[in-house]
Length: 49
Ligand SMILES: [Zn+2]
Image (cartoon, rainbow, N blue to C red):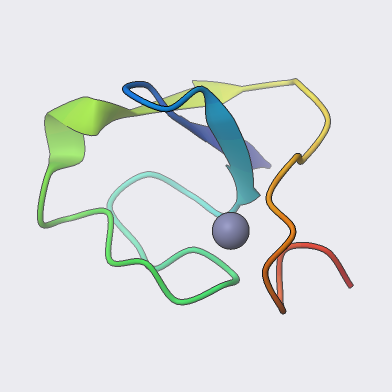
């Protein structure tokens, strides 16, 4: 499952309403996040592997 941070267009690994693999709490600004099928583009530890 991938999540896009809509303002930046960056795609992270995770589910909406939870914490991304790189540690961002999506609950803080839930409307900034959308579930997508895009390839993960985040380079942070956890998302990138
Ligand atoms: Zn990430």
